Length: 313
Image (tube, rainbow, N blue to C red):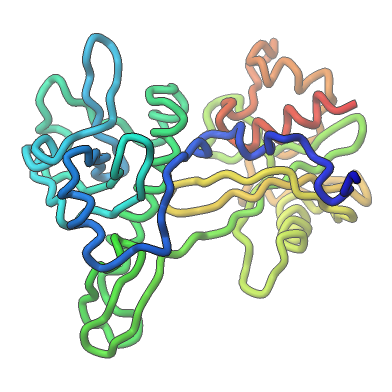
């Protein structure tokens, strides 16, 4: 018998965004304090090396390879024992570790490429890109939470990077994920797009903002849309989510239905904000707009929100 609650495509919309191709089995229930040591003892262990928001890639015959063995990691002054264990895939243990050698000191066959460019340029496959999102978020959290927030004592990495323990007061601290609502306000004929001053020339995107404590996702969508554009929303529906390792966010994509169309944009935050017709947005998606206007690249959840609306019946 059909169950309407689950009447949805077999492939969720979230599976089509960048950083969402992770196939690692995290084995979260088996994260003992010696799990990194156990993983490194496996000859199949592979490591992602990162530093300063960049992924270290081996370049061979024009192909980028993100995976390093233990010896290669140590040659770049990484300390494998301080790696975060992401889990296991069909190839064995997968870990992420900070490199010691700076990007400017790498040999010619190694490239240090920022995470955003890795994904926008499609330099690695979706599974590796998903592992990058997981590893970058874990390393960033551990690097920024080295001290106990209760007593200030230096804390210790435990459980493969998924817990930090304070040896002084005994407190345990766990990785955080910052929820961000990203929303496309739409009518059957037009959608609302904004432009931030830091965007690339001609780029417009969906509005976005952090979900605040005590707030539902739907109310965050309504609040941010009103604050940034002066538009009150009625119905809000969820569409998809996206891991976003800058440094450890989760983008939560929604559609909002406006109760009015008179804009009062906050131009202290936005450079521009306006309604776009479906006919104008189509060439923006394909980057063929005569005025050079465009949407974010296909890996971005904003692109998928906009395309889903354009292609809706």
